[in-house]
Length: 160
Image (cartoon, rainbow, N blue to C red; front, side, top):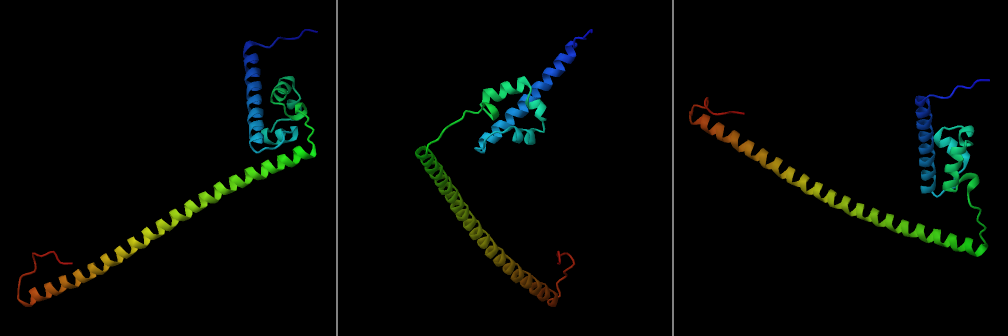
């Protein structure tokens, strides 16, 4: 049986496809690690949309081995003391993060209060300006009526 060797273009296409697959898998692994979750093939399949057959390829297994995930994950035996300390550390980290978030919320509340006060000041200023405008408009009307009563020609004045 004669087998045909792939052309250079086909080799380039296969290499590009492999690289795309590897980058998808690496991104998924990084995302899962950011969330402090365990990387499984099932989760990689869901995130990347790749098949289990693709994840069983040697070049993919090499990437999984390098990242020490899935079947290449290091098995750790944690005794109760280490587990308790780990839980305490996690709780302490969560408390620190919670305190930071509370601080940010307080900063936002202060900023909102300052913004609300600024709005109230501007609203008061607007109402004063509107009141002064009405007073001036009334005085302008009175002046026009007075000038009209005196017989002054008002045709050249800009009348509202």
